[in-house]
Image (cartoon, rainbow, N blue to C red):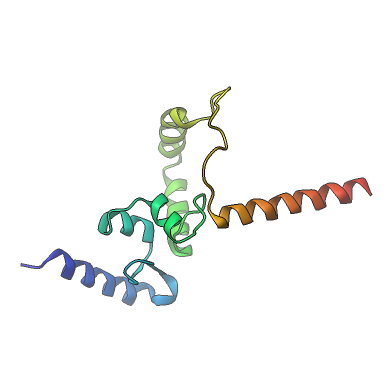
Length: 134
């Protein structure tokens, strides 16, 4: 009977053979390659995507997945648009929406990557405004 570890090793080898190392993302914990390393970290290393990103200084707002996997997900959304948008986003998403007067808005720890991305965005906006006024 095959152990879980040997199953994972076999799946990793299959992924490498199918996609190639350059088209996969390396898990920063075990150094194996995956399409979705955060999903792997949750299932195998028992840590959440948020914990994984915080531990390695990654942007909490950005997904970590390969371009090919992003394209596959986009295609899936297009094919299942009615279910994805109306059922999942509009109905189920109500509980996560901003509520007027929420005192916790913006009061959370941001990763270094997020802070840098926000600074670049602010600079970009500032440059745009300066060009409009001159």
